[in-house]
Amino acid sequence: MSEFDIAIVGGGLVGASLAVRLKRSALKVVLIEAAAPPLSLPSWDERCIALNDASQRILASFGVWDALRPDAEAILATHISEKGRFGSTRFDAAEAGLDALGYNVPLRAIGAALSAAMTQAANLRLIQPARVVALTEEADAVSLGIDDGSNLRARLVIAADGAQSSVRALLGIAAVTRDYQQHAIVSAVRLSRPHQGVAYERFTPDGPMALIPKPDDAASLVWTVPSEDVESMMVLSDDGYREAAQQVFGGRLGRFTALGARRSWPLARVVSETLTAPRCVLIGNAAQSLHPVAAQGFNLGLRDVANLAERVATAADPGDGRLLDDYAASRRSDRERVAGFTDLLVRAFSNRTPGLAQARHWGLVAASLTPPIRDALLRQHLGHLGLPADAAGVSP
Ligand SMILES: Cc1cc2nc3c(=O)[nH]c(=O)nc-3n(C[C@H](O)[C@H](O)[C@H](O)COP(=O)(O)OP(=O)(O)OC[C@H]3O[C@@H](n4cnc5c(N)ncnc54)[C@H](O)[C@@H]3O)c2cc1C
Image: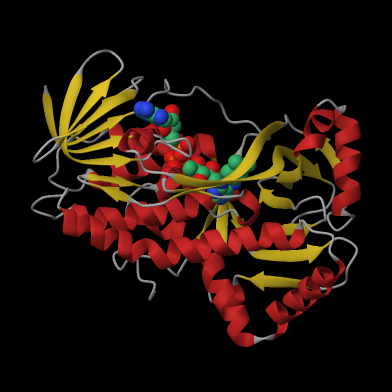
């Protein structure tokens, strides 16, 4: 049996980021990932993820940002509006004293940068494809069973195995699930007018639509629709879907001139009831999986990574119960605020109740005109609330 200080279960964006961060420590780390490495090539319509300013700083402090920058499109402003109403609000990078509010980066590029960084690490073993199927608590370690019949032991198990976390289930930790009865359809569009780095969030009673800038005046289009409509929208012709999306978005960016491949995801909020068990901790989507409306999921997961890594990297015993309790307590407000805000956005805007329409309107006006509200929203948007001290010079 192999012995490790830390076993990370799940090598998605969150688990792989943590593995890269821990290669700077003296800890012996193993990462177990169920899927074979993806093979994808650059394309104009490849799937992207919007990173906020805090995530950019965290990835820079992990040493991977330089590899991502050539593929990243800067988000210079965010414009938020509601279809059929005049209220809107806009946040600009200049107002925050920054070059960019964040960056839209291809998942392929993040995956490639993290994989390259992992292969350079002497203290890291990667077991892939392999699935963790059993977990046994011991006095000073946790034993993990892998689906090839092998076992390993670690002083700390970090579950980064996604919304349907099998480690969470093996530990008997419950999660509260809210099915939004919505799907996100993700594609890319080419625009007839330059986007000038502006990201758009447009709310409709059926669900929000986001347009996030990509290079060469294309944009990632994330359209949230009621689940009962998703099948019929996925079988629409490209022209039919493009026209339908254009109707909802309007003409701010001219015409959508081409549409990329479409993929759809069912949307649910899954929040773990607790983050820790003896010598185990949950992070990323295994801890909280959110609606993509505010593009917060990976951004929040990366703050889990940065905060946890800061604590375990120099600990005498990374699985120490007090250390894990302190970590969980330190993450409470960031998690609750982001999960609560995201849920509020979905429920307040995907709703036809007349009184709520007025409240939404005044909410957008307040976000535009009331400095303390504006400042709090901007800091949340940037991810600065919840950023650990060692992630590059932002006062939390
Ligand atoms: C449509 C959409 C758009 C989004 N856009 C954004 C955005 O713009 N910005 C943002 O911040 N977030 C966004 N998100 C959220 C973001 O994608 C997730 O928060 C993030 O990918 C979660 O990463 P993770 O590593 O925690 O989980 P996952 O990506 O689910 O990774 C879990 C990994 O664990 C592995 N695994 C599972 N079980 C086992 C096991 N038993 N043994 C070993 N390995 C296992 C899986 O193979 C997988 O690789 C979006 C989400 C959606 C659905």
